[in-house]
Structures are given as C-alpha cells and as structure tokens.
Amino acid sequence: EGGVWYNSATGKLRAFVAADTWATSAPKTNATEAPAGAGIQTAGVAFGGYTTANTGLTEEYNGSGWAAGGTMNTARRRVSGCGTQTAALAFGGYTTAPTDAGEEYDGTSWTETNDLNQDRHSIAAAGTQTAGLASMGGGPGATDWVDTEEYNGTSWTEVNAAPVATQKLAGAGTQTAQIAMAGTTTNSNYVTEAYNYDGTNWTAAPDVNTGRMELAAAGTQTNAICFGGDTGSVSALTEHYDGTSWTETTDLSTARETLAGFGTVASGVAVGGAVADESNTGVTEEFAHSILT
Image (cartoon, rainbow, N blue to C red):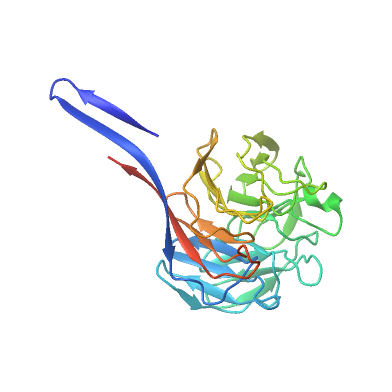
C-alpha cells in the first residue's frame, strides 16, 4: 500500500501511499447501455449501445462534459472499440444478431470499412485505429468465441485463437500487448481467468478476484483496471492489475453492467451501462490512481 523511509542524518521521515478514487463527472447526454469507448480522460468518445432501441449515437468527452458527434452507419449494442477521439475504430456488436460490421471515426463522421471475419459481439478490444485487436466475444456459435483478429487499418486477419471460448469480457492494452479478463464461458458461469496476448501467442495471466461478465476495463497489459459488470447482480467492484496480481480497490459510485471504459489507470473513465433496476444510465465517473507523498 505504500512505503516509509527514515533519514537518520537529517532526522526526517518520508512516506508515500497509493490512493484510488472514482469521481462523478457530467453524465452522458443519452442514457445508454452496452456502448463502446475509446480515447483518454480529457479526449474520449463513446458510441453505439442501446437507449430505447439499438443506437449509432456518438458522444465526445472533454474531461468535463459530453457533446454530440457523428452517428455510426450501423446502429448496434454490445459494440467494441479502440483508438482515440479523432481516430476511433468500432467493430462487431449486436443488431438483431451478432454483426461483423467495422467502422472508422475521424472525430466528425463514421466511415464503413472492412468487416471482421466473424460475426461477434461483446469482444475484448485493444489497440488503435490502424492496429486494432478483437479477441474472443460471442458469435452465432461457441466455436466463434475463441477467434482473435488483428486490424491493420484496412482489413482484419485471423490470428492464433484464444485458449478458452469466452464472451462478455473486457480487454486493455495494444495489438501486441493485450490483457483480456473475466467474462462468461459456454456453461454460462462467471469466470475469473485472464489472458495475455503478445501479438502472436496467448498465455495465462493472473486471475481477477471476482468472476463477472459485462464489465469494462482501461489501461495497459501490465497496468490495468477492470470495473463494474454482472456477478449475479450489478457490480461496482473495481480491481487494479500491476502486472503481477489483481487487487480490489475503490468501488464505482454507481454499480452497473454493460458499461464502457477508456483511458489509463491514472486517468480512467467509466460511462453508461445498466443499473440495478435494469434501466439505462448516462453516469460518467473518472478514476484516478495517485501517489501521495
């Protein structure tokens, strides 16, 4: 949790302690469950999801509030995304069935691009608009749940499959260094397993503490947070990964599932989702991991 030093020459004591906080910010204009997110805390974007129907609405976040952006070409929920506010990538999702649709955002409008090779929703996403990663996720059949695809800015290529068929999970990192965690497997249990992808192969990573699905994540492969989700009821649980183990830390202020996350561990964002009464929310919270000296 911290450390203490004593300087015997000067007689001074110095200490530091890590502090994790969630702070409520301005809500997203449209209460939305199952959107996707991309960007950083001061320049983020949330898109797609479900309001009273599947939506393609896009909203941009500046660290203080939300403003309308361009509308996606394919309205869908359980969409995944990565990239930045002015160069985002959207892929997969659910319309009336899992979809393979891909789109790119330039900060103003969305352009249809080459589709995934497999129709899937609730995918663990990572990377950028020109180097994206789509790992696992729900498809028409459970055999699709292990699929991993890489995007090069033009097209998607299938690469080595994940070791376990998982959907409704979360991911963080880059195309060559992703961590994918939790979710649900074919027997509908809430799993704790996490896996690392290095651009070629998958390896087991330390498990999260609480099994859950429909959660969100932010950060990198070795410094990540996962938060919210469904543990049998909506959850506010937040866990921090330091590259070695997961530690439970400060909970979200609002428990919810099917939310979006983006940013870093030092400056993360949780937005949208569905709360305990199953209604949609636009609640936005900012995460800070700071060192107090």
